[in-house]
Amino acid sequence: MIRLVAQELEQLAVQAVVRASDAVLAPLGPVSLTLDRCGGERLARELRTQVPLEVGSAVVTGAGDLAAEFLLHLIVQDSERPVTSSTLRRALVSAWHRAEAWQLGTVAADPAGLLLLPEEAANLVVETFREQSTRGFPTELYLAVSDSELRGRLGATVGNHQP
Image (cartoon, rainbow, N blue to C red):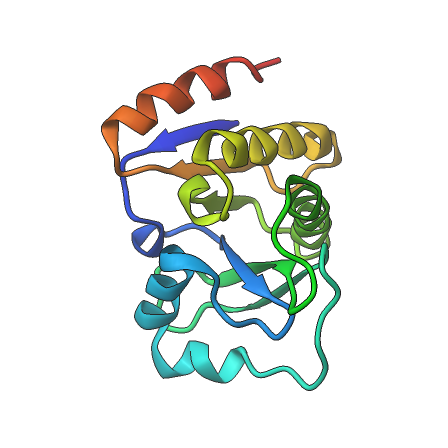
């Protein structure tokens, strides 16, 4: 099930929140920066890596002081590769596999925080979520969109992906 909600990502009490990251888990964009700020020092301790991560992968960490329990970090760029729809797609597929392994039922994402045009990012999130939905986890996806105009446009995107 996919739900559009008019809430900020950092306030959603879901099991996991999606966060755009680079290969060393540094935040990418204002949404990731807000998550880091709200996650506090507990989250900052979780974000230390020993080696760079592969672009197109995803990792799970604790969420610090956020309302969510975990963060699903999408590794969408490194110093040599910018964010593309292909790297975002690969990272989302990896994130859904991680969510399945961790049995995370409810996941939230803000399409505006995934570094592509929000409609393009939402389309990829919904499409990859639908492709994996037969495996059991995650069971619910919350698209957090505070802008009412964008939420209206994304309603069509979500509607176009209903079974």
